[in-house]
Length: 243
Image (cartoon, rainbow, N blue to C red; front, side, top):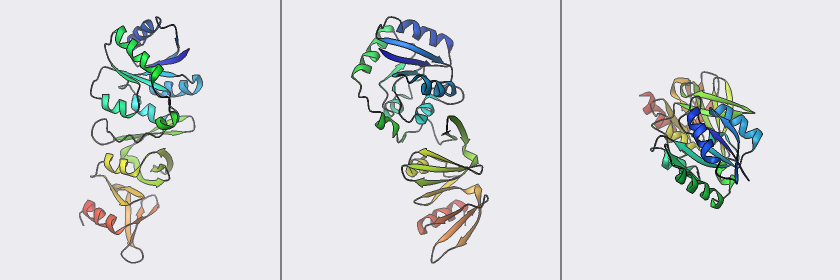
């Protein structure tokens, strides 16, 4: 028996999908959720094998929910938008159903569930190299069992920490699976610059810059965080600051 949940902010879409799924005797709907926050908690409690996941939802998107899951189950995205298909398959989705979809199309998607590779470790290490649309304006992080949405303007710096990045926002530190190259590409260069291979700073968070050893500098953020600036990083920083 495949245990599944439905995550969709439209009650009619939830009910229609559940009606369709009643014909599949090897599949059991164990939960329905209206948004990503509820779903995140429910996934931890129910441990489903499969998620039918909408993308455009309030609070956090379906993609942001997947980012928060350390070992995501199999996922079938269900959405009214066709422009997210490439991103969905980058996240190793089993299938991508475009609303309104037929019962026969759903049947094909469920058939793929039984043959899709089950590799949670691969799903857990998503690079997320493809943007939803333009630059990031927020970053979703997990702290314990809670989800926090960090506004891009409040992020003072991002630093490398092994397979993770450490995000410094409003005086707090958050760890998130990801790469420096991703955030360098996805944060607006008008606001952020990479000053070192291990550090990206929000230009508005800089308090002062001082020399440190030969041809090297230190950036002092307004929260008193000190970060090294490489020679190459200093060139970028001067350009960003127009000095």
